[in-house]
Amino acid sequence: MPTSTSPVLHQLYRDHNGWLNGWLRARLGNSSDAADLAQDTFVRVLMARNAEAIREPRTYLSAIARALLIDKFRRRAVEQAYLETLALRPDAVDISPETRLQILETLAAVDAMLDDLGERTRRIFLAVQLEGLSYVATAQRLGVSVTTVKKHMINAMAHCLLLVED
Image 1 (spheres, rainbow, N blue to C red):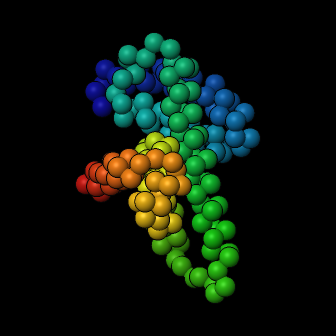
Image 2: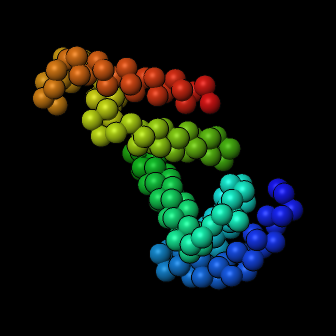
């Protein structure tokens, strides 16, 4: 990080960290999680290297923090769904903490990828890939043409391939 940005970032942190912690604590009801997300917010600012360009610091910081909150809640929902699914299994599943973390990170990545697809593409992709419906059955269920289903599946698969490349 250039040293010219450091004083600006330090000042930004001094001026707004307390406020951001309070803002997050009000939304989370937990000072520990609020402090973690506030730190993550400032790490994002640090990585963006744009502290000098910030004109409305609280608006900017709250936008970053809001996105981090959404990610946190989405991850929590995915983790809860995973744990509920495990609990429904008749046989006990014994996995290491490392494997569990890897599974949860993968599920969160899949969830984020699905969220990026858009509503119709996501519904088509899930009907075909998760439920095993044919293109014809998917088209009938959603009231679209088979060509539309094919187009959305191509878009979804291309999106998946681009994510795998990254």
